[in-house]
Length: 344
Image (cartoon, rainbow, N blue to C red; front, side, top):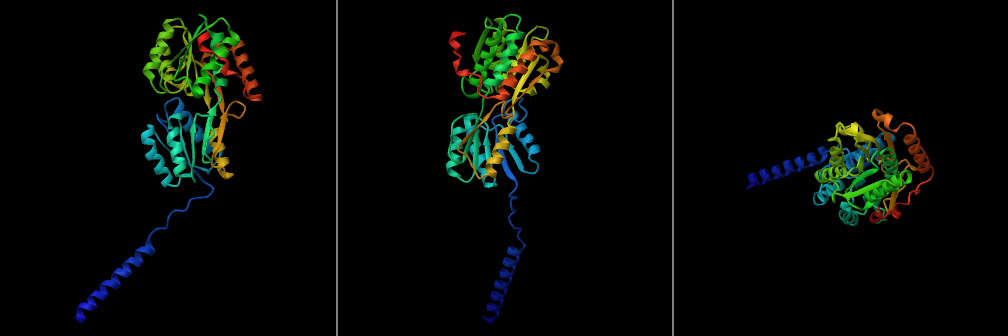
């Protein structure tokens, strides 16, 4: 009996020693650098889609350069609103400070997550709504970029017919489209503007079909926004030897194979939004605001295609420069709500 008790006591002592050793040797939880803001991005397409999603990704990369050592960044691609919830919760569990769900389709998810995790900042756009205390929205005032595209289209068209392939008639897409109409009419009141919507932000095929239809109807300058616009640009590029051209809503389009048809393009500079989010985080502000984007606050950039300079040098280039200077001096100069498509 005494031998049995001795053996049991030894086992207890050994177990206690192993347990103590385990506690001592376990690595402590990594401490987060208080100076680093952890940002996670959730997108429905990819970071190289030459459109909506790439613009935000590029903006975050640029913001990292503007704020050296301040931003720890990761992303999840091809996230439907259903899948995005799981990704967002993982980011919260990993200690991310800001979760950006880049698309209005994520609105309901973000509002739900914000209520569940009040100490985390969430952001989505485009939207001009003012959300809860830990939600930021962002809204490109894209009537400005649309207006520039319209100026170019109205002055460059030879047939006096221009086309517009939109995704849906809402948000920043609606603002861009109406700005385009106003730009065309400002320089060419007699030009016909054909407007159609694919009904999707990512339906390349439908956008291409609409563009081909507009081209058959005589349009020689076309434009469009969001990812779906790439399908319309490809339709324009199918007419290699014809005077049919594109003005874009993403400067990355100038450098892709179809870029030889792109006269000029604007882009959203999401670096301004991301830097703004970091500044608000530093100030202890978690949300409850809409961050606007315009030429005045550096939210937009614009580029002509240098390979096509002969098409815009002179009057077109001067008119665009004049408009950009006006927008840079003062925002909200384009009354996009005045456009009525039924009267075109």
